[in-house]
Every structure is written in C-alpha cells, then in structure tokens.
Length: 445
Image (cartoon, rainbow, N blue to C red):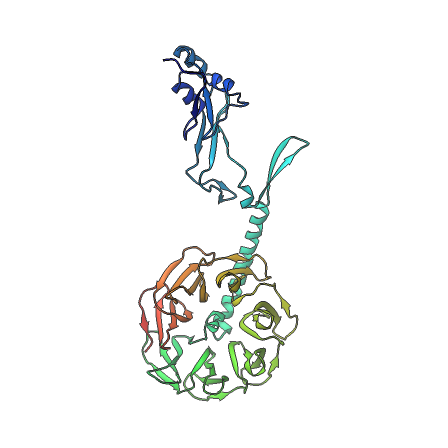
C-alpha cells in the first residue's frame, strides 16, 4: 500500500520517533528530515509528516542507529525543591543519545517560580541558568527548628513549675485548673445564674465545693492556692486555698486574661481600659505595664506577648517590668498563643483561619483551610472549632497544618487541655471532657 508523502500523524502519549517510524515502515532520520526537526525531540499533540514507505530491511538497519525518544504526559509528581510542580498535563521528554549510560529527561521550566526558583538567560555564555534559595531556606528551617526545641523546653519547664495555667487555657476562659491529681472548675447546675468553685479528682471522684456562687473563670492553681476572676464581684481577682479556706480579694480591678506566674499575677485591667497590669500574689505591688487595650496574654521568659486591641489587634511584646514595648508586625492576629518559637493566631484577613509566625513576627504561614472560632495549642497539636454550619465541631491538626482529624460533633466552646484530656463547655455551660483522640466523652458532674 502506498502512502501519500503528505500524510500527517499526531503524536500520542507514549510515542517516540522509533515507534512511529516502525509503525509506518519508515526511518527516524526520514521523519526528522521531512519535518525539518532540529533535534529528534517530539511532543504530545505535535503534527508530523510521514514519508513514503521503504523496504522493511532498510528501516531496521537505520533505526538501530537511534535510541528511542519518548514523549509522554507525567502521571506522577514532578518534585523541585521537594514541591510537586506537576499541575496536570505536564509533558516530559525522555531521550538517550548514543553512548549515554542514562537517558536525558527534559521537563518544562515554566513552573519553577512556584517553588522559589529563578530561570535566567545568560547571554554571555548562551546558557539558561536555574537558581534557587532552597539551601538557604533549608538552613533557616533547621535553625528555627533548633530554636523551637530550645524554647519549648523553657516553656514546658515554666508551665510545669511556675505557671498557674497555660496561656491557651486562659485564652479559652480558664474554665478548668489543675494541680497534682485535682481539677478545679466552675460548676454550674440547672438554671443557676452563677457557678460554684469546685474541685474533683482526675478520675472524677470526690467532687467537692470550695466556694458557692463566685462564678469563677480564668482559674489558676499554683502552690496550694486557687486564683480566679469572681464573676459575682465585677470580675475582681480572688484567691482561696485548695481546702476552701482563706478566701481573699486581691484587687478592686475588674479583670480578664488572668495569668499567674511565680509570685506575680498578670491581667488585663478592665477598670482601666484593659491595660496590662501585674500585682503580687499577696495583692501588693500593683504596676501598670502598658497603655494598650490588651488581650491574649502570653508569658515567655521576661517578655509578655499580647494582642493590642488598640492597634487593630496587632501582636506586641513588652518586658515584664513594662519596658521595651515592641510591635512585631502589622498583621491583625486574634487569640495569639505561643508554642516554642512560633506564635499561632487566627487571621481576620482570611476569615479567621489559623496561621503561625515566628516570635519576631516574620515567616507567616497558613495552617487551616477552614474558618475557626477558637483554638488551643498543646503537646504538638492544635485543637480548634469550626464556624461552618452547624458550627462548633471540634478538630485537631499537627503544628504544621497536617493530619487534620475530626474529634467531636457538638457546639464546643472554651477548649481547655490537660495531659490527654480536652475540657470544654457547650451553650448550657456544663463542663465536658473527651480524650485528645476524640473518645470517652464524659461530664465532670
């Protein structure tokens, strides 16, 4: 059968010049010459002219001079700097010239900019150069990881030995405090307007009231004392011994965000525009630390990190003596929590999705793909609730945003965490708990 010299063939996935020449009883050289190909490279969808049929014997002899050139669409990840740049129809050319031990693989470079690489034409040497700051960024990540581990060790030691509660729990109203094998919590029953400060063992036995109707929140427990905000006395700070004796008012300031560390109590003074204050655990030494409307107090070493409501919820820090007040950046950051070298926050510019940034305010990274209403960071996980309909579902994810896991389908508020238990309330204010893996749901009373 004779073929028209102008017969056209469209290159298909898996084709190479060797297979095409064999299919139409011609030679690779003939196809290259007829189509004026500068090099023996083809691509999917390319239209080729196929020359007249020649003898099969001549074809075999001449095809042996060429190695196959394969054109195909990549069906697997194409990794550059450990990032997949295969966006779907990604053409790849595989060519092994004579004498080469391994084939040359050619891929487009159009997507390299997505992974931080730069493609530059070097006119002097007539070459294309691909440069990347990958190694620099990788070294930076290693440094940050080491700093993160160091700061984690500091904050974990501080939390165990010198803190009345965690910043994450206080951010979630501090509905539960813990010391040794006892939990201290706000017990509200039935239609009661105010809750009772109560304690119960971690196995949920020996439920014992300490002080009726103080409606406590921001509960801190340290060195045999319970510190709390008295909801029945305009939010003033009280303390009481863990046996229920020596109940004492410490200040007349209305307060929120109460955090006890060592011999000091740090709080947002609602009687003075939520300015940041501290006072001694015996009620003396009251000092104003800033002039900002403050919330989300985190204590790291000699620094207090907080959310400056007066400046559009921007993250700030100030020394514990009130000096060296510093804005970290111009990002609005809700509910900041510090874990190691990272600040975790909800980003109002992105529908309150969870982000993180380093302690100096740089390296902002998005973690969650859904809007959130509250969260708490603990033991390598972020526990958070969604705001999608019906809302309040509880999830967790790793600190890098991976391993997103559903835990509980309820309207969850006030996430407090101790060890392997999550404590929370619902709209009726009763305190519940579940394991951090989502099992064993219980009520405290």
